Length: 111
Image (tube, rainbow, N blue to C red; front, top):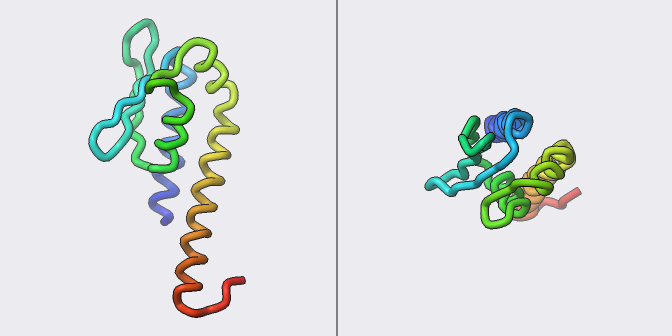
């Protein structure tokens, strides 16, 4: 679990770096992970491999047809801290929900 959270933080950091350098985001499903390509002037200048399923789903919700550009890109860039908080909150909620179901499956009272 700690390793997964560390990987999530690294992926969020990589996304924040790409947002500062680029003006377009393109998502591409590459097997088991989501590849995020940041473009500036038509060239890919930064890529991030997103393995976390919660983060990948949230990114897909933000993009239209796998592309984020123009005013939508600027809005996403300016509200990225809120996006990160939302993703972290979802991740924690899912972990707590999974822990709660494990405890109740063992026949113990859930507090």
